[in-house]
Amino acid sequence: MLSCCPTDDQAEVLVYKNISRKDIIGVIVKDKDQAERESIRWYDCLKNIPKLEIIIAPDCFNGQWSNKVRKGIVPLEYK
Image 1 (cartoon, rainbow, N blue to C red):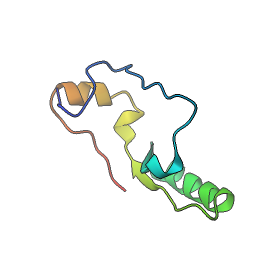
Image 2: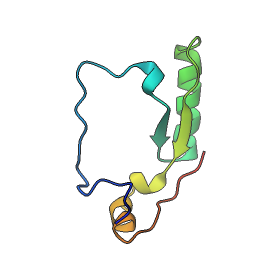
Image 3: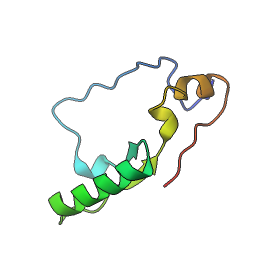
Image 4: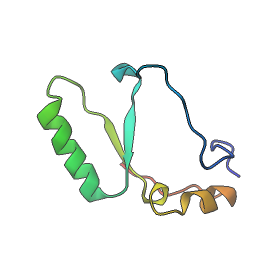
């Protein structure tokens, strides 16, 4: 198991009220198409807010994440 990953696939983080924008460093999406759509959406809606880093991580969305991290394999991620 990778030490940087939770041991429970359904682990959740509970947040009281909200997360400050300054604390959000990026967003994970499933593919390039979704990354492009989100980038356009943020440009249109959030003109005065710095863009978030977009990480494409298909294994987080296709069910392979758990199997890979349990075998010590780092799932694919790219900007």
